[in-house]
Length: 121
Image (cartoon, rainbow, N blue to C red; front, side, top):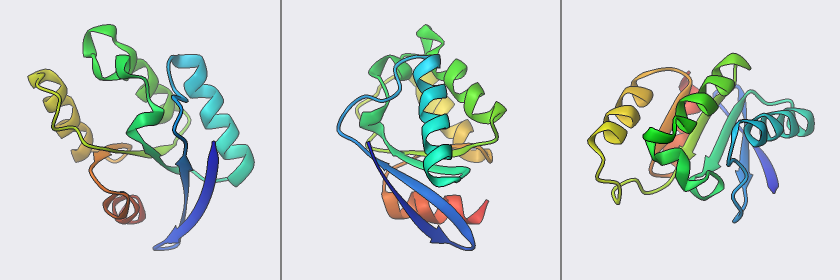
C-alpha cells in the first residue's frame, strides 16, 4: 500500500494506491483506517475499487453495510473510485446512488472527481 496526501480546499486527502485487495472484512477495514490515520493523520480517504473485495459489492453478504458503518463510526470520509457499470444489481445501484447523496461514502468514477467531492464536504 502506497499513500500519497493531497490538499484540496483546505482538506488533506489520503490517496491509497494498491493493486491488492486491502479490505475484505471488517477487521481489515479497521486495519486500513488505523494505518492510514497513523501514517497521514487524514480523515479523508480516496481508494481504488480494486482495494475492496468483490464480496463488498454483493449486498447479500452485508459486508458493504458493516464496513461502511466502521468508516462512519470512525468519522472517515471515503471515496471509492472505479467503474461500476459492470454491476447489474438494482439494489447495488440504489445503494451507490444513496451513498453518493450523503456526506460520508462516495462511489465515483475518477480520481479527480473524488478529490473534488472530498474537498467540498
